[in-house]
Length: 78
Image 1 (cartoon, rainbow, N blue to C red):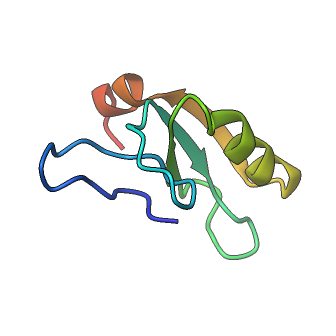
Image 2 (image 1 turned 90 degrees about the vertical axis):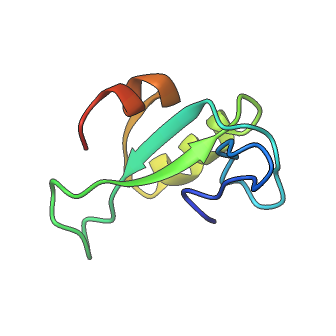
Image 3 (image 1 turned 180 degrees about the vertical axis):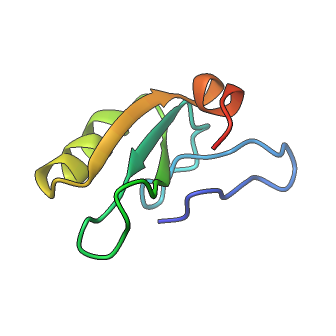
């Protein structure tokens, strides 16, 4: 899954779910504690339809740290 894929025509970030081309509206911040330091945050982007599915996928593994809107994420310094 790509975390920052964009459409060349619209420069819109799209959902990280496999095969989805919908605009992303959520950021799922996560890390794998076996390989990342505790403060490290990787991100997946999600559309409305895939937010719950991707959150559950990461949550079941203990990786999910935060879910915020793309606008909130963009407004903060990461």
